[in-house]
Structure formats: C-alpha cells, structure tokens
Image (cartoon, rainbow, N blue to C red; front, side, top):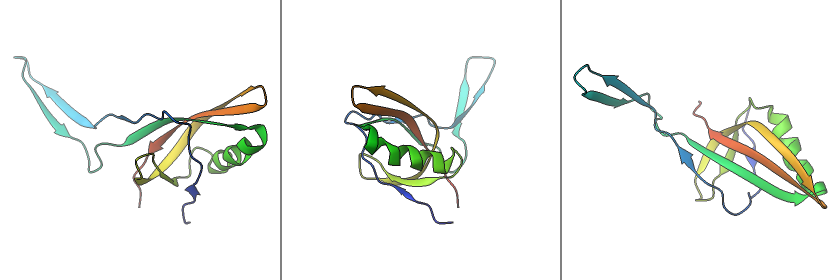
Length: 111
C-alpha cells in the first residue's frame, strides 16, 4: 500500500526533538563506552499544533483517524525534509470558532 502525504502546514513554532539511540556500557571504575544502536539512530519527533476553523480541522482529524496511529504516512517537515511518520495520539481543543489539534509526529523507518 502506498503511503499518503500529510499535506497540511502546522502552526508556526514547531519544534524538532531528537534523541539518538545510544547503547552505554558502564564500567566499575567510572569509564563508559557509547555506541550507536541500529542503522537509523536519530529519529525525529515533531510536537505540532494545527489551529483551524472547526470545518477546516475535520480533514486533518479524518486523516489521523484513518491512519489509526498504526499506518505510516509521508510528511514534509518545516525544513523541507520528507520522511515517514506515525501519529500515535492527538488531542482536540475548541475555542471561539476555532479548533486546535495537538499531536506528535514520530519518524519511523520501514521498507
């Protein structure tokens, strides 16, 4: 199955979070050895918000619900890099005429 592109721009102020995958071996004398774990050692995570009118937020919610936190999708990050992501959780808040979706896109690596 071909992946679908998530084609909505997040609100200004998105932040990139990366935690390299590192294996640490600690020795009794205070020394430690560090090595990268696996091939893809620096996955990206993007906490995002989307503020839209209630009508315009529906397609974003439909997209996230369609993928169910399981199926990966393509997304172009704010720096222009394209990657494969999943969104495992999202929240919706409503205020005067607008809705705000808060979520986190987590980069995944698959064939």
